[in-house]
Image 1 (cartoon, one colour):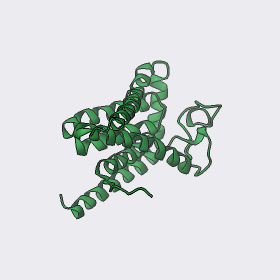
Image 2 (cartoon, rainbow, N blue to C red; image 1 turned 135 degrees about the vertical axis):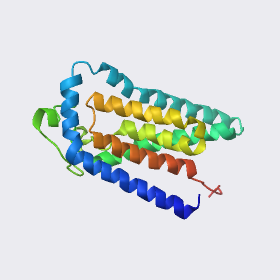
Image 3 (cartoon, rainbow, N blue to C red; image 1 turned 90 degrees about the vertical axis):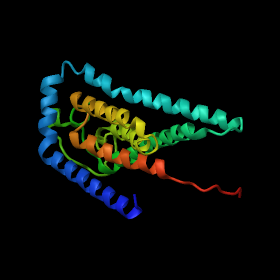
Image 4 (cartoon, rainbow, N blue to C red; image 1 turned 90 degrees about the horizontal axis):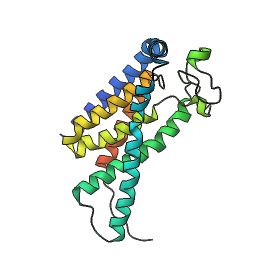
Length: 214
C-alpha cells in the first residue's frame, strides 16, 4: 500500500474511533455501567477472570526480555520470530508507559468506587473528566488493559498475519471482561484500544538505524 493511502485510511479509522468515543460518552457509558452493576455485581467473577488474561501477556513479555538479553549476551541473532516477539514486547511496555500519562492527562472518574473511596458514578453520580487532576481515582480513561492487549495485537497484525484472529479474540475478551465487571466505561475501552493499536503499529514499523558510540 502506498504511504499516502495508508495515512488516509489510518486517519479515517482514527476519526471513526474518536466519533465512537464521543457517542459512547454521551449515550452509552452510563446506561451500560448501570446495567453491568445491576446484572453482574454479585456474579462478576467470570468477567474479572477475563481481565486477568493481561497478566499472561505481561509475564510473556518479561520472559521475552530475559530471553532476548541472553541471546544478545551470547552474541547470537534473534531471527525473524525473535524479532517479532521483541517488537511485540516493546509495544506492550510502551503501552504501559503511555497509558499512564494519558490517564493523568484526562483525569476521568471510574464507574464504581475501587480505590480509597474514590468518587464514582454508581456511588456518587460522578461522571466526567478533570484533566491533570492526578490520583488513582481519576484514571479511568483510557483503559490500560485494552491499550496493552491492542498494542500487542496491532504489532502482530502487521508482522504475523496468521495471529490476527488470536489478537482480535484477546482484545475482545478483555474488553468484555472490563465492561462486565464494570471496571471501565465503554469509551475507555475504545480509547484504550485505539491508543494501543497505534502504538502497536508504531512498534511494528519502527526502523532504528544503528548508531556509533559517542
